Length: 487
Image (cartoon, rainbow, N blue to C red; front, side, top):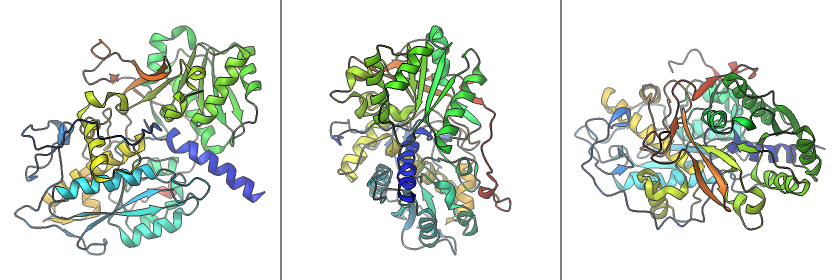
């Protein structure tokens, strides 16, 4: 019985990794990054906005439209690390993943792969003002987060660019050792609302991105009257489903969603669910789950001869698995939202091209996926904030100092790698785009580039309603809050 429960939790956890990370994409290429245009050559172009490096930053290497924050030592010399914060000859940054879990080997390892590639790219320029970055593998193995947290406390200066599925298990130890975190993603409400952290793409449970539903209201108005949400009947996936329902309610115009729970480990037969959608006359469907189950449900819907007018899912369904041979015909018409530049458009996005070139050069065997982009965004934000701290703290890196500088950043795109977010205020992006399965391949559906809906960078943005406050019970988050910490 215990073994069966752990298996169920593991399958739910695997789906949760991308479902609860804002804009997180499960899209994984085959590793061919060598065709990306070279964008890492020195440039004299100066960035604008809050992503500009400090005036002392010597590097002119670009990451998309921002100057690289990495470089050699300044006249102040190689930085030192504050006493008791795991200093040394390298700056040790811990990247959390669950890749060592035996039932799902490699789970989120793409974040570690991207972090290691970033370290190579940054160190080639001199590191953090002459201090080389060393990546520490914080493998939580799904159920061993407390031990991985102890490793972080003992070995690292900061946790950067990763995430654990059961990330609420890091508390209160995280606060007890004075750790700071720049996570690539957060899963639980506790981790999403904790202090001592800054997330480049925030995902608070009470403020949700809404651009995908705004698109549905405007362009699929006839479909939103009878929605349904299918979700795994597990506490975390149910909460995600309730957040989708809450987003619809906050925007208005949507019918009351029919909530359909399923076995969190997957169903042996999806036909009854497809038949229920048909019998109820459901016109809009969102599925909280993983791509494999979405494919099986789609095939069942085709068999019963009924597919809702609009199937609109979160970004973890932007997956090669969805359009693989034998699946693409069934999933034709699926729509997903993302806040990351699509891999299909690397030739139109210098930051994505830089990411692909970075992977090809410094970790050619690493996985290339949306989670890797999130890891690199966190790394860039951390190094930029570290530079700002060094400017104000006598060339000494100190955790709360770095965190305080990050909290000043209210506009962040990682050089154009993703839609604009507000890390300092823990607010998700108010922009997004819709990808769809069109003629068996992933293609941009909305906004059309160059259209009135395009903000000029390929995103549809809505400052007023692009992120909406929702109401609900998000659990007791007090364990993740330490009121004695300055940040």
